[in-house]
Amino acid sequence: MTNTTNNAMIRFEDLRQEFTLTGNTFTALDGVNLDIADGEFVTVVGPSGCGKSTMLNAAAGLLEPTSGRVMVDDRPVTGPSTRTGVIFQQYALFPWLTVRKNVEFGLELKKVPAKERRTIVDHYLELVGLSHFAEALPKELSGGMKQRCAIARAYAVNPEILLMDEPFGALDALTRVHMQEQLLETWTKERRTVMFVTHDVDESVFLASRVIVMAARPGRIFKEIKIDLPYPRTEKMRLSDEFAKLRSEVWAAVYHQPGVAEAHQ
Amino acid sequence: MAPKDTVNSVYTPPAPVSTATRNDALADSPPAPRKKADKTGRKLNRKTLLAINIVSVIAGLAAWTAFSAVGIVGLPGPLEVLIRGGEVLADGTLGEDTGASLARVLSGFLIGSLLAIPVGFIMGWYQVGRAIIEPWVQFFRTIPPLALLPLVMVTMGIGETPKIFVIFLAAFLSCVISTYQGVVSVDKTLINAARVLGAGSYVIFMRVVVPASSPFILVGMRIGLGAGWATVVAAELIAAPNGLGMRMQQAQQFYDMPTILVNVIVIGILGLVMDRLLLMIEAHLTRWQERR
Image 1 (cartoon, chains in turn yellow, green):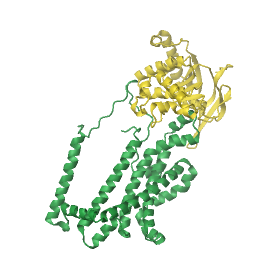
Image 2 (cartoon, chains in turn yellow, cyan):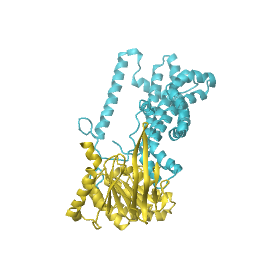
Image 3 (tube, rainbow over the protein chains, first blue to last red):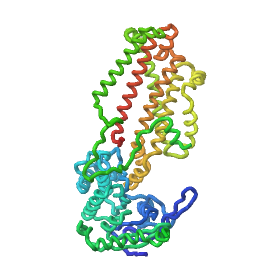
Image 4 (cartoon, helix red, strand yellow):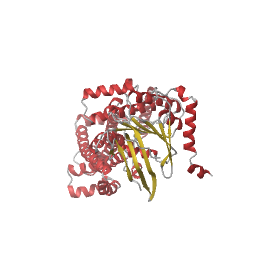
């Protein structure tokens, strides 16, 4: 299952993560090895409890691995860094700040001069289509708009890596498709290494050049499926036979894992 | 018992700062503002509601007039009370008493709140701090501040200090608990969001924890001001050279019902005005909050 290259942007090395809950220790991740190349768009999909979000948090530096490590650009991750942007499922916008101030937050911490900040914020609000909502408060936005604001905020500090933790999970199906297309459009314009965690098989195939299917108890990589569809991805592609074939392959890997089958017998 | 439960029994915390809204419609349309409607589903406009308020007050005054006309317990009528109000206003006693009571409550309230905010933050932010402070706060919270007045008067004398001290205690205790509650209920995702954008502990505290807990602090301050106001009047009943409470106590000895009622009404109006002022400040400072 190891797939090591020499120019990996993110590298998981024998990652193991244990949690202790009410005295019981359980293994969320065991023996995870994965390389994600510079500029690659990888989705991680799997049943709940397979540790996909844990993997992302370890890469974000929000979690200390029990053993093994995560390397970003050949340096071990020891804590959060502005080189890795994170987008959370619950948007995590600061509700007391306007859209502009939210996007500006990371730039202020980086001590970017005010004039430059303004230019950068304008650019990213434009990119995600929120220019007209710069002075709005998060409570005035719909879920899709909130998530686009969060994407602009992550992009603004110019990270090399974007880690996305089920970012469209709380959105309805129509909005979700719309957001997927917009995300790919943004990504095509300003390419970053993306690790995108989802539980939606369609989403995982549509976005990625490689889908990582996880298995649960303990969380581990079960299968890697290459998605040989060219970018930009279109609606036509989503309805094509190749897409359907890849989709069933990922579906089978997610829903008919040996462990799952045993549990149902 | 978890601290959350004990706190909830004391006051209703503000709506939690939520980062999630589930009912998301189309990506490009902002959510429609929710309509206010009563339980029957009918929507009454502001004017109608205000008219009902006014009618209710007039009906109450009429009932009062009727009671005093019948002669129940020697209750003076509204007109008599109004005339007495004019008299005490003209001779300056009402102004002096109001000033004295307000000065006491505001100094106790300000010292109490200003101390409660840092102490509440220490309790919420540092486990050791919480372990040291919490037993004291929980213990004194169960004692009505007025019950400490005899003790305080013995140790501090009968001057301004003991009165301001009990008001300080009343304001401090309600504000410290809600500040602490605000700090511990800050959404962890917001803290993580700040961390991944490069924020250290200080920035997280100043730019995430403080604003996120501000609704709780303001609710605590409102409750603290109410508690302080209730306490000052009662404290003046026991021993004071002036103040609205003292004036009522004095009037009671002369069976001077109109003066008692003037003071009761002034206490009510001032309490209401102060509460509304803080409510307005609160609404302004927390207008970013999602309201249900």
